[in-house]
Length: 410
Image 1 (tube, helix red, strand yellow):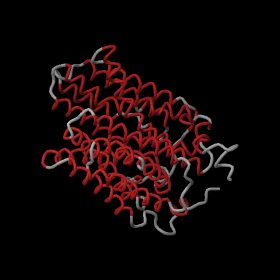
Image 2: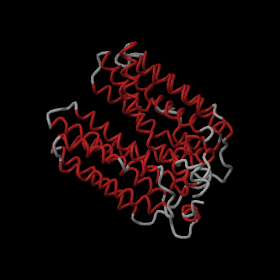
Image 3: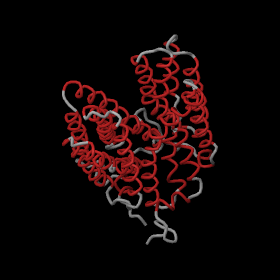
Image 4: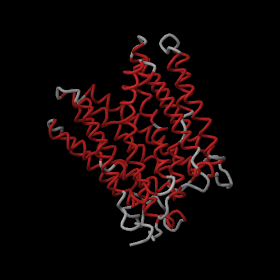
């Protein structure tokens, strides 16, 4: 047993969680990213309480999400060229202020102000997720433990989308409609500030290398990896909409929330389980296998069985996602050119988000013109497409990236 794998019989995830700075960085990152899971519902409820329609609410939510997706890589590039802490402080302050404007400016009466606030809030979203992934190799010792950290990171993301809406509902119940956006602003700022004041974030500096306009996009295989993540994101987007349509067709729309929660629970369980898996000799081959498992997990949903059987199938379908993401995190760390890793992780988030949006839109159309079964067929097809894209070697034989990926876990 290698010393970097376990200490006194500890599991890799135990080693990660006991590593200095990790509890703070992970907790701060999750808290600071809660607005991602809170803002859509908070915006919707704020607009509806002010007498606005779903079209306005959807427009503002789309602006928030789109600006975050577009500006994430830009923010990532800025951090790669400077430092984490100042960028997080400024972006957290701007995003929180914009959310407060959105809460109190009455977007129904002043839709232009609401639209500008939504764009600014999304665009200034602190890049905590990419920053954390860049720091893992600095705060966790040993290749296997770094992989466990990536897996734990991917698994705990589910908590954001489970906890975020609950916090919004609780805040509104206690303090009124504006409290949802106010709590998102406060939690986002607090989490980013707590992260930015941690020593690893304060001392981290971007690598001084020759710059290129394409950033990480010029890395061999990087664009194809991002395309893979678009397909994975589409799979998840299709499922979320499709399972809602399925529950409604089954006569119990309330079951949709439970089915989505079970999918998230499966992801959490799968991510924690994957922390025990060692490093791969070839990470791109590992990713290919995991993508195949993801497609296999969604395939049984095509049968659209009764609600009782759909519950375990929803759980099963979520199990492979964190492993897929963890493998992609590890792979991009080998593929991205020096000095571009933060931006590369931001592009991964954008790729997944774009795929999620496309999948959601296509699933909605299929539900209108066909059935929930056709949506699940599309989810499986999107996952299968990710497998096909990953079939050719993502790492070219003999490249430095492949040699780094193939180094032994010792």
